[in-house]
Image (tube, rainbow, N blue to C red; front, side):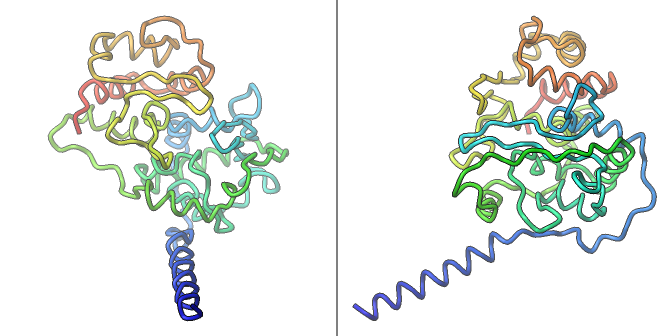
Amino acid sequence: MRRTLTIVLLLSAALAIVAFVITSPQRPYDSLQQVTEVDLKRGEYLFYAAGCVSCHRSSDDALLLGGGVKLETPFGALVSPNISPSKEYGIGSWSDSDFLNAVKAGVSPNGQHYFPGFPYARYTGLSDAEVLDIKAFIFSLPAVEVIAAKHEIGFPFNIRRGIGFWKIANFDTSTYTPNPNKSDMYNRGKYLVEHAAHCQECHTPRNITLGLDSDKAFEGSLGFDGVQVPGLNTELLKALGEQAFVEGVLVHGNDLNNQPLTKPKMLEVVASTRKLSLEDRRAIYTYIAERDD
């Protein structure tokens, strides 16, 4: 009996050590040299393409990024942080490495996993230079000197180390790969839809681990707030037509039946998509309408 107990304890300790190691937050950009040249105009464009405003705005002014926006989940509410240049309450003291580790690896400056309500699993498709352009634009905005509320996630789901298991199951760190058999417009749309604009985060259902169910991509989902998010299938978009989608949906805020949107969250998204160029909006339509990879 004593021997059995000893074996069980040793195995448990070994498993605990393995779990500790494999869930350890990784900061792959810590050795990055400070970047001196950035493209502020591209940073502004990608800031909107990536939907930063819809989660981090703290007032009617889209450029005041004090956070505080709630995202309901089955485990409680996530609350978006202040990402303004405030050194005390925001990210004003972050280095380029800190920003890249956050956006593309989902790890904070103090070495904790971020909850995946932050779509870092999609932002891996942005280049390092693009991400740092976004940082430069954010740092050009006014500092918001308020602290955002804390997440409302209860035990044990508030243990950040556990997110390491979610990352093992769902976090694909591969970068954007264009389809060589498709047009430049299709591939531009793929980059925007799959990565920058992270459309699947809402339009694809989740699996048992709350990762995206890739076998049901763009089939629609029931949001954590109980609101049904429509699917974006090729037949539907072709029936709607390019003009109705590119202008009606992405600029004027119509739904996929060409009726005015009533869902606040999608209206927030449209506030960003209307700032995209016509060519990029057409690329989004082209990718979704022709998607087969």
